[in-house]
Length: 162
Image (cartoon, rainbow, N blue to C red; front, side, top):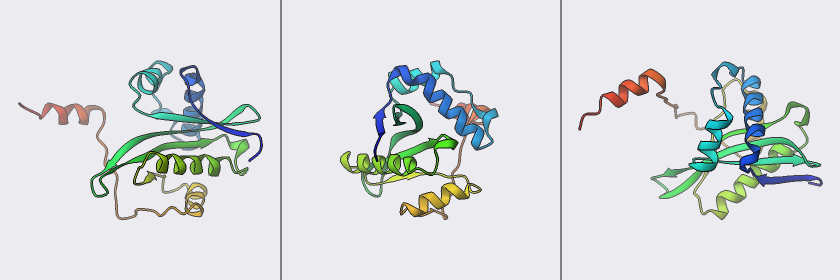
């Protein structure tokens, strides 16, 4: 794809990454859930290296990002890549940028000898579901994601007695 480049994010991209996260949250109608700050992102992404980010640029202008990290499959016995978020600015959708970024992550998954690339998608997000299926992905309908956060996480942790 001419004039489109994918690069790994650097620490100076932190504000841009937060802007993409806010754009995604707005699209998903979850803006009230964003508590990330530039400081927490710098710490998590560039000091702890808990996740990685790629930036997609068209004609030198950032148009999207993907944030991902490694997980592990006990059944495969190999790490995988979990795509936490893929976001393309609304005015730049439909040009193949998301497909290119997902393909980049597929290539990275193979290069890193990972067993799979996976992600979650909101049930109501039909445009994304259709896009992902067109790329060869299959929904894992028999699995339900469970999450513990906030006070429930504190309570869970408090139940551990040495």
